[in-house]
Figure 1 (cartoon, rainbow, N blue to C red):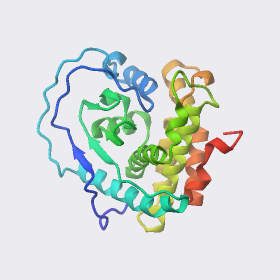
Figure 2: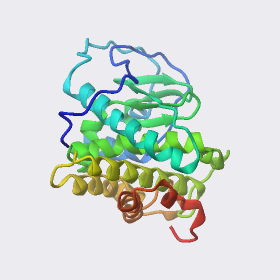
Figure 3: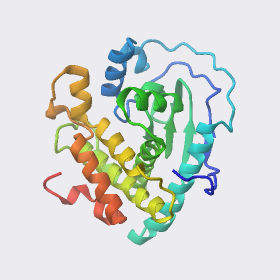
Length: 274
């Protein structure tokens, strides 16, 4: 991505030097399956990866608030702000910019305590996105989601959940267990992928993309499909437990948002077949 001329968002909060004691775990994003996959690859205990192996405080080394990862995140977040400040009023809603929290190891949110290995996540309770840059690097290295635009897609997907929260779509999730190939959870996640595609259309229009960037995002979407992750972790696929959609679906809905540039094209609740 050509981010040299892009400004930096002021809505990034850096908590990477802070520790957290025990508490409830916020299992968000691709939490359980990703933790299982990374555990199998690295030999770590998946319970520890999910923050269920104890609540001890961990010492954090000092961090540079202006290191490459932090600057990249602030620039990407700025592009999402520009995207949705322009796009959301077209569907009758004013955009309220969220904060994005950088953390390392674990973090406390309104959704509970989350270990880094649950991956980037959005908490509707405090309207904040949370990203551990070290895990994002590991996700790229271990699951093949390579490149800066792939990392940008992951951030844009979480901001897509914020858009859903503003529009009231997150309320459709409701309580209780909601999994399966046609579940509300899958529809919500695929819509967030489509919203990430709307962001992709915006940065493409601004001339920010490098050759190969779109392929990076599509590779990231494919790498974290439920079927791909389950096959890696268990050697088989269980559609009745899907929560995010297949690799093919995630790629297709991202492309739908990017090709249209229109959030109205992302209504996964209006289609019978996902």
